[in-house]
Length: 125
Image (cartoon, rainbow, N blue to C red):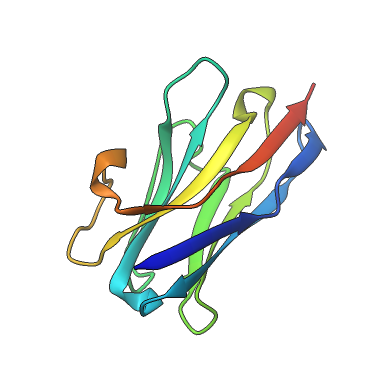
């Protein structure tokens, strides 16, 4: 089992940036592919970005491609989401999630086994 704790959310003006972190504890971090999802009020949880166990492959939603970057540091048991050029429509609770490393690619939410509690990101116009 793995426990995930997100941090780094907050309030930022449009055009600004934030970096989210997700710290993992429990089983070996490199055993997991990692993903970021977000959920805005009244909307379904949506995929944002994913990274394979080694960091060699990354995947992005079209809405964030070119603005967000996912990365991981297996020595620190942490996955990051660098968010630049933020827009008001990026406002949501952001969740990180972990899936067994044999699952790869742009996984659906249901393919992730573990989830963090979420961190709020609010982008003002």
